[in-house]
Image 1 (spheres, rainbow, N blue to C red):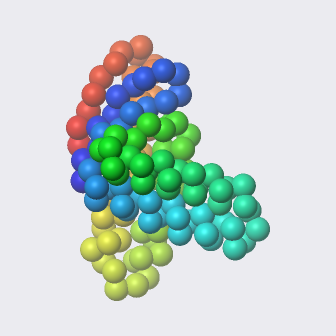
Image 2: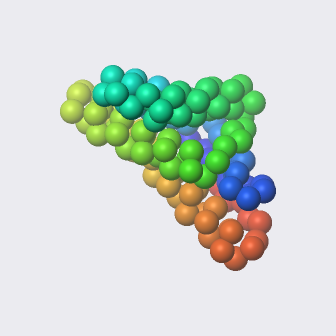
Length: 125
């Protein structure tokens, strides 16, 4: 999976992504959103659905425009999804989802580092 971060304005990032990463994030956000809906927190569920939609659009374009806070929600969803998968026999998918979570969290850290130093850099993982 490939994830590339570039600083834009303020609290937004542009991620060049591959299809596998997009599919993983979409699945994680959709399932986590359904969980929140089922447990009475529709606001978070709706936000995760919106994130999934952004990543679905990004899959077609190879580029995701999103907020750093929404990256954090996507990373949390991937972490939850990976934990859920580890209880099943979906070991390979759990590994991919854990990798997606790791990449998203690294992207958040990289973006924050860029903002702290005032530089614009691009990283490819």
